[in-house]
Image 1: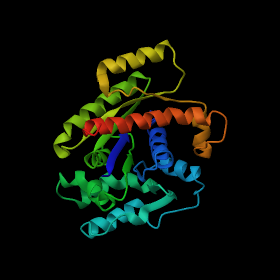
Image 2: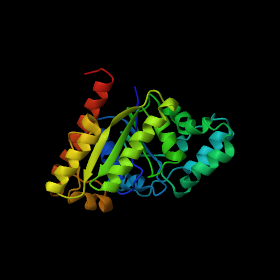
Image 3: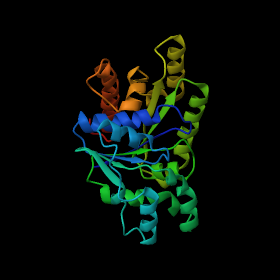
Length: 272
C-alpha cells in the first residue's frame, strides 16, 4: 500500500528540501522502494537536485504542473498529471517543480466554488498513482496557504523539519497545531514526527535545543537527527554522491533516519 508523506515547515531554511531529497534517495537506492516525489515548491530545488544526482539535468516533463492541473480540473479530473513526471532512476520519479505553481492557490479559488473541495485537489490528482509507488513524498513550500493544506489533506503522514533557532521552533509548533486543526478534513492523517536539522556540530546549545524540543513534542521527536555535514553544500551543487570522502558517513545519517521513519510507520499501523 502506498504511503503518502508531506515534508514541511512554515519557515524556510530548516532542512526541508534536504530531507525530501535524502528520504527519496535512500528509499529508492538503498531500500529498493518505488518512490514518487511531488515538488510543490515553486523554486523546484528538490527537482533540480534529484536530476543532478542522476545526471538527468536535460530531462524535462511533457507538461508543466499548473498546465496539467488546469487540464485536469477542466476535464472534471478525468485527465491525470502523469505528463509532469520525469524519471530519474528506476525506482524514483519526480513530478517536476515549476515556478508557475505559485499560482496554484489563486487558480483553485477562482476555479473551484466549493471551499472544502479546494482542499482535495492534490488528493484527487494522486489517486491514479496509488498502488504504483511504495511512497509518495510531497515537498512543500514554507507557507500556510492552499498548497500546504492540499498536501496535508492528501497525506497519510506529516513530517515536520525544524532547526536550532527559536523562530524555527515556533513555526514547528504552529504547523503542529495547524495539522491538528485540519484533521477533520483528513481523519487518516498521522504525525510521522518532528525531525531536528542541526546546522552545526553538537555543542551545549544544540543539546539544550534538543532537550527543549523533546519537552515540547516528547516521543514525536525523532531519535536520529539530521546533521548538516560538510557534504550537504557539495551535494547541493553536484547532487548526491557516494564515492567522495565523507559520503558514506553523511549517507549513514540519513539511512538511520529513514530506518526510523519506516519503523515509526510500522508502529503506527500495528505492523511491528
